[in-house]
Image 1: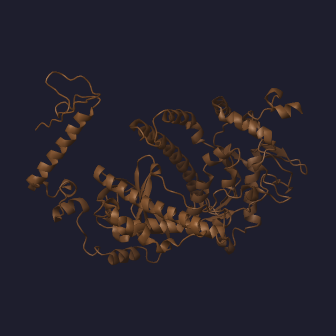
Image 2 (image 1 turned 45 degrees about the horizontal axis):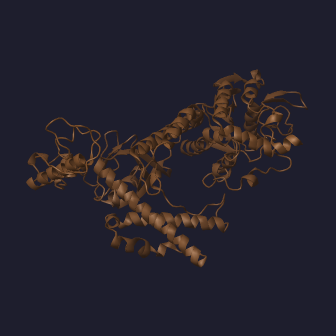
Image 3 (image 1 turned 135 degrees about the vertical axis):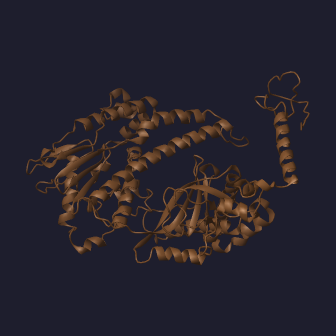
Length: 614
């Protein structure tokens, strides 16, 4: 069968051999780059072949295969079992699955967590998922736009819960692609918008602790997206017990289909909610909300306590109660990939991106995915490192003492990129989760605890110390201290002197009380949070530069030469993981001083004109 499409205004394509004409299926394989007539002829031929195959009927040997369920759309028992698996007796209804889950967790302490897995949808299911995410994004953005218009007209925010007819029902009556998505999925998107608006209003009214929450913003297509499915909208072949390495497939409803899941670990109980997520790098994930039993274990070193001091040069300095010290080097994953990332982003900027009246080119979209994959790789490295170190502390120690850090506030300072690259937040969150699950004691210091300024030998609190001071001598007793080791020792002493580690009230301490509302800490009120009392100054957040010096240094950072120079200096000042005895600790400020060579005195020729005249 040869389909010929005649187009007299043919443009593009290459010269074909004799006997081949543009606009035919025979010329499609040889025409490169493919011209529009050849592409249209090939598309028409594919449609004709599929129509002829469907008209002839499904062959008998296709029954009982996954292709019979997905390609031929057959819903017989044999095809359904090939995709969804054999249904288990006694686990078919929701109530019976919930009863089996309660029986598995009976008599154990549980917590509600999320289990995330990668899913592998085929092209047909992938397009259905994108349509579903697009419909949910449309409802969410419609709710946000409706709230903005209502507030602009009346001065008050509307109650989105009662606007389901205007935001969902009315558009579904005139938009067929929106009507093809179940109403429950769209209602979940509307509830998300309502929750975001309520968080903003509660923050404005002072009913929500932590920094201010901004008004909900429009969701963008380029950022991926997600869609939530309730308990009855998804099903696992074989039940939640069939989630081992060779577990069953995940059925996401008739409007989407079934997908394969990479079951990296089995589910502990019956999931209540499934959220399908599309990340910017093009990968698909599903997260289940489940109940998990607490696995209380004994540490490898019973009774040992670890005092942790976090930093930038060294990721953590740890002082153990048995007299040992350990310094863990900061891997700086973003800094190692910064030059490669800059090259990729420059290539992306030169390509034809999405602008008004012009679609993005395929090369631009392909390069965007490359940049997103590199960002994901850096984030995965950072999370793996932080969780590995936290797991080791949880596994080896009974008590852990950490400091309170205003990470969002420090992220807005001059060292903000380095602060976020250290993954302190992931590390502290992993310590909290591990201590709850394994039965460890986690103590959090007060916000303005003078760990770096207090002498661990005599208890004298000295004056402020900038970051460039890595070792100092106590004016009272004359002891010389390494800045990080001294802070770790003070953290360890706090556990015994104030928290009374052996007492029962230690279990009443909670990490959330000391981490400054980590769920809500997004950087509001940095000056307020970092403003210290008169006698306790978090000197790590200041370096004493004037305003014009900060502007001049910021101008240097923006240049490529300055970026390369900083990378070279930081690599020279790096440190490796060390372990040293308590009596052998000595101040080592050489590497840190080399790391601050970029803060050299400013020459007169580099000063602003006004300051030069002064």
